[in-house]
Image (cartoon, rainbow, N blue to C red):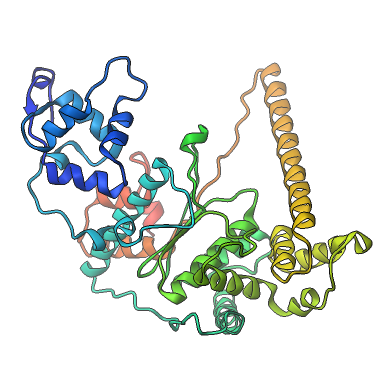
Length: 416
């Protein structure tokens, strides 16, 4: 729908069922919604009385208010006035299927999750159009299954698949944390698991995405980029894979350093699975340790050694000591804070180095060009999109949208 300047005073009747649906989706009360709508304004757009009149169809709204509502939810102007049936709630969103999550979700996080839910629905259509059914190729497990035994089973399967893929030169042998993470993506895709990584570019604290990982039924994992904490992202990916194995949806914040305080049985199982997957054949080196104390320097040398031999972070290793009651709570917190201070100092040093290079470039009349980080793309998703395009199921615009191909770039360079 296109609105011209002379249409600005035209009034529209909101479909109250749709507006209520979107408020329920984001778990916004009428008061929360009004505060969002009027935020940063000297003159309010709506108040509670007018909102109630709109929801009871006693009052219409003009195009300006409609646009401001859409600035919050990004659904498109016609979505709020359409009379089309809405999808069944539980089928459409994890927010309607679960009441609580392992993350305190702010509004930006909820919007990001809703975007991935829309992508999931789009993906289901794309698969159906080419008669592709992404069947589950890994066994389903239960909480009664021992997580360390399951971890060894899955690790064996993944190692065999990774070896085959390396031999076929589909992937390369991992030489760093980022390579290992990418290889995990590619191996998971061989079992019809879709993994999407995103980079949170928000700078304002209140808008920073507040979750690190998510699993949505039946087969979608979403990860927040954790540069420079790649091992946290590796841990999160495998934690979400554990949710997939259990068929249990969840949205998680920090799982790598969660010492099982107040955790439910599912989270305990997923964290146990992840630890035993990543410790590989070195589990006895940690389990054989005695009580960590100042006398043995809290096993910092041993933790560093295990860090170098596995893809577990020192955060996760010390957390495992805490889980196994081999370090006191006070000592664990002290060591955790020391590591956080070290990481903060490293980040400050990197920032100062960057600012120094930037200043030097300006003095020399040059512009410092820094290539921004890029997400790890889902090749499984991309292949499904390409097949849809080749079979005429989607047009070039949809192809460019899904594969993020800029308008000035030839599609041939991407799809072949």
